[in-house]
Image 1 (cartoon, rainbow, N blue to C red):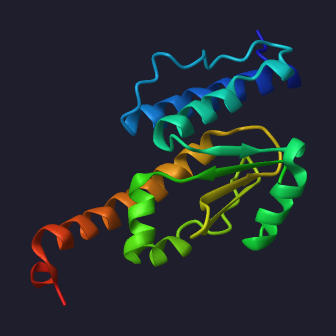
Image 2 (image 1 turned 120 degrees about the horizontal axis):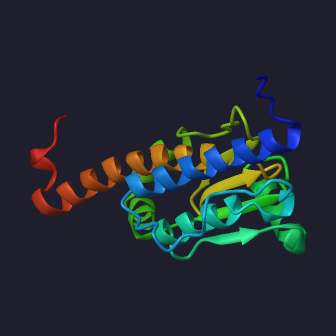
Length: 180
């Protein structure tokens, strides 16, 4: 018996696995994903991929004031992309939260400029950038295997958490408790 997937079946399978991995990343970051949509993409459901919704639900949980720009806001999307030297994407996510804002205000955000700037996924072409005015920017050049974006954000969040703890420690204990 020969088991072969046609292109449509393979795409649905790959996308469903990617969506499942994205849910796992969100769960590992402490998000309750029970209310998120189903990760499964049905055969022939090219327009029914829940990946974008799962990505946005995760962003909403981590960055309550996140913004999503697409072709409807092309002028603003292009202007922001140009500010951070990013090729204008199809979709742009602008992510900011209280921890990131506190890092910006304290001046400890400089390290974020090196984190994942210009990251391109293996299965999805996307870019990440950091800008003090906007926060973290993610530009998707096409929709697809989105779990790589969730993995990249989890890595950035680890850096944000580490830097945030340093700021909190200084506020709590002063500078004397830090290594020189």
